[in-house]
Length: 78
Length: 352
Image (cartoon, rainbow over all chains, first blue to last red; front, side, top):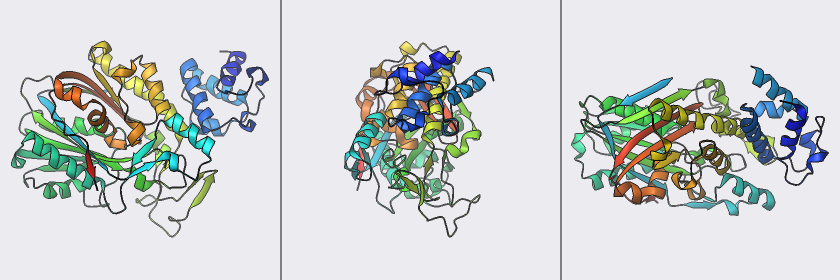
């Protein structure tokens, strides 16, 4: 897995924000569109694309897209 | 892997009872309209039947059981087992199943057992009651499953209150020599015990002076420690991975082609989760009935309630191959496959 495709897939879970505006350093919770529903979409994307189960705590303790990416990476290698 | 194959037992019929009181989610005023609209769309829950304070799951199950016994024309003296599956019992003790034995007028020569499980409870309960019956020494038994989860939720908690409805169900099981019976896959993962929890009021955290205090958790989420806490993200993540996994394990183990299954009944968690699960298993929509739009998440009642409200005619009419899968609080999950033949199913019953 690589971070560019992850950021792209992460951004696609937002309906109203252009995907190009996302980077690994994006503080996604500061986006107005971020909600518990977006969180579920991200969890579903990670399950579908990477076969990894993100927990509520994983999402709560993350600030940037890269934080989530690193958790997925660590769980993929586990 | 906990697989079971219980032979010589069949489901004869089932009944479901809901409170007549309905709460429309569109009428919720504590959530902003655009958020509420999105919430209803994502969860798929438009309305819920909710019980009045003081009325219990056992009242709903009692009514369902009476009607079912009547339609089956069962002689009550022949019923030798009763299992009650619920996390909303009448009392902390005694067990509600014994109270129901007496209330239903069943023989005192009847074993009774309470099982404390929620979303996976119906399938777990089926595995337990059919196990008791498989040698033929007990020939007729009742599985009563239900919950009044609305009673456990804070009205000011948007993460629980709009989701849960109340229902009680009764399922009749009978010994029938030579039948292939029911096949199960069962599992648990207690590492997720706090994902769905009521913190206070048991013996780990006894009821105390602070138990009733409303705590502000986040915008739109206030609740006390006596009320249900649900980590939606944990549960969603768990559900979309574990439910397809257990159904696949069951089908593989017993060499079942999913195309030969007529109905797949999943615990009714929320639409987004149930859609994901269905798509992962590549099941067509018409084989996966949903009752959550009109009843919400009814915990241990969700599978039999869906069987009654969405597919009663088909199940009454002929022979069907069905799969049921429950997953949730515990964490706990279970799936079952069995054949049903001309089930006795009274129309949905209402409790005033």
